[in-house]
Image (cartoon, rainbow, N blue to C red; front, side):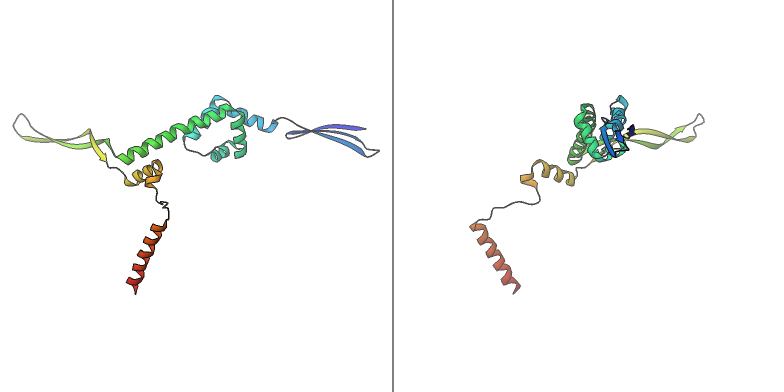
Length: 195
């Protein structure tokens, strides 16, 4: 009779065998997340959650975040379902970015005024005690306002998403008997014009 215990990654293999009679029994027990346990525990720490939130805020997709962590995207999805802390960190990171993009698109669609810091070269003219004219140049920093005009493409994008029934590129028109007759009449006029 021979017995053995062997660890193989996430599994423990118990072997019980009788070499003389040729029978054997193998029992495989899976340790609960023994390999991945170290991985997800790191991401449940305050530093790990902060890093996940930062990656989401930087605009990384879940697939890219999973690659940065070193796991399969399905594993990250499982962690999001299993650990609310991870799901909350990812959603907290993505919400502000979405809002910032919406605000930037809105500003771009309407146009805005921006204050620009500029440096100007100024020439000062003065007269010394003897009455001679003197000039002195210096750099002065000031602010200038510049208007950024509304962007037509941003306006179209905004309207086509906010009011798709009015602003979408393709419109669905109901074809009835009147519209069919109008189309035949129009095409008949085109055919006679070509001849």
